[in-house]
Image (cartoon, rainbow, N blue to C red; front, side, top):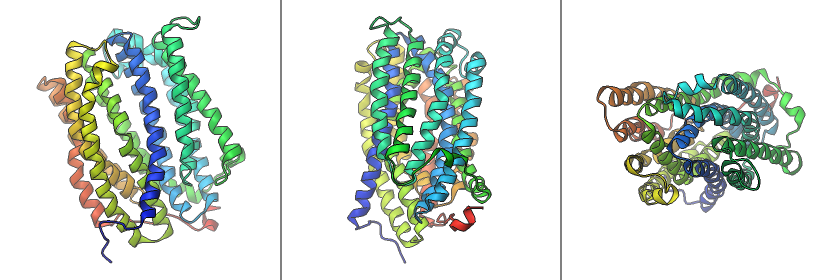
Length: 460
């Protein structure tokens, strides 16, 4: 049966919208926390801004690892939700929590006891390292709380409970902004802590986040009904499936974390102006592209659930329609990204001269790259990976990272001494190149694979 390009069922678009909206809202509020940190710390000067940005690269690496485990859980568990098998979902969530907690402890230990070594990976600017250390040694205490929150949110997303993430992010944003004002600038009788104040605000916000999530899971959730004892669950069969299908997803996310670390190390040696410009432009990009990532996440839930239900003809029809949605999202995001350069002087009044010039150049680069991002990321992670072909994205990303991005970035920066925007474009070039791979892979439909098992099997 040949799949039509447009789904005519209005419920499909309604479901896509209702899933994407809260996840996009959660993303925009989550990134807004980073943006407000960025803007408020930016009032302290380029060195403080660069210091927080570099410290957050270690935090971002941790987040990639945690998100890798959670995404692996989501891809596998969503297919079980297609069969309404909540017992298997609880077991998968328990295994995910254990992996995440161990990872968070390792990252905390390195950040707290060896901060100079950690930050030395990203930059050789001594003034930037000193500011970064003040931030990192405080914010690392938030890692365990972040881990618990992400595991709980991911578990609820498996059963299509996505609204709590939005409300949680609203609360976090309000707390973080208020406490940033108090601790960074020394208001309401508090001492002026500068970048360390931003770290304190983030830590308190993470603690409150975790408390809210624990309350929601214990008292309000009626689908999954997680209990404390559920996190001691284990299944050898599901562990094997998690390793087989989930490890490629985790490895792919971890690979992007390592890629970001290497890219930050390259950018970190181009000077304070380049570091500040990348920090600003990336924050704007994350805010503007949230709708795109919301649709991609919603796509993963819809595709995974439909594959788990066994209706493969409907999966193919959804995949074709969603590709058109992705292209439209890319065009709209590109226009918004380009227009954002007018916001820079408003949000960052102290950013002038070379830093402002580089920022505007990077925004133009991102305006082009986001066209590819909207299509290929959503196709490969939202459709192919959720459909059961979990290894392909990892292999594809690995090839592009180590054969295209890193070599071209290193050559541009240290051999040809290219301007910062050229180096940045080399490091983002895969966003366009992967579109060819995505279009071919998705429309062959060989990625559809049901990876669920019967409940009797998963109990062993």
